[in-house]
Image (cartoon, rainbow, N blue to C red; front, side, top):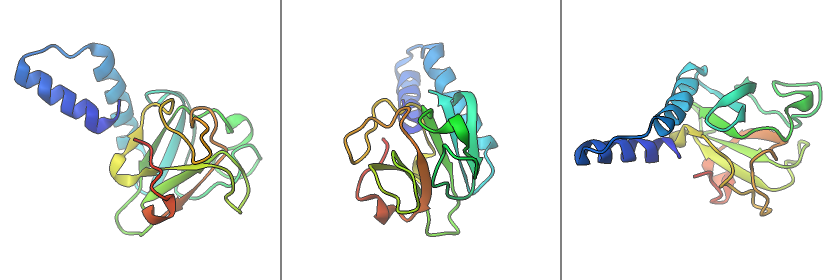
Length: 156
């Protein structure tokens, strides 16, 4: 469940007087807390859904290969992310993080983006790269881009 969906559901539940299950609130709270603790201008990726498990990496820069020994993501970080967040700032045109299931500075392979305005994607099992592959456990690289570079493919 995305942040905006969780907030809308919680607001609707309050209006209707319905109890919101703890699991939903905890999932949203975990990613909210992770997003708030991420330095402005950075992105982060987590091993499990709901910003749980190991923090795979956090960086304000690009990383063209999450499986090598350079950059914020290294070695076994490749193909492990199940949730990601974008704490980008408004003082740059690079508002989206574009994730790839390929490596290298040619930025090849399928891609999918996370807008700054979305804050985070707490589960990647319902998001797809442009190649048709599910994003969950398939991210191998990322870069910061203007939203126009994303070709309309955004994590929802």
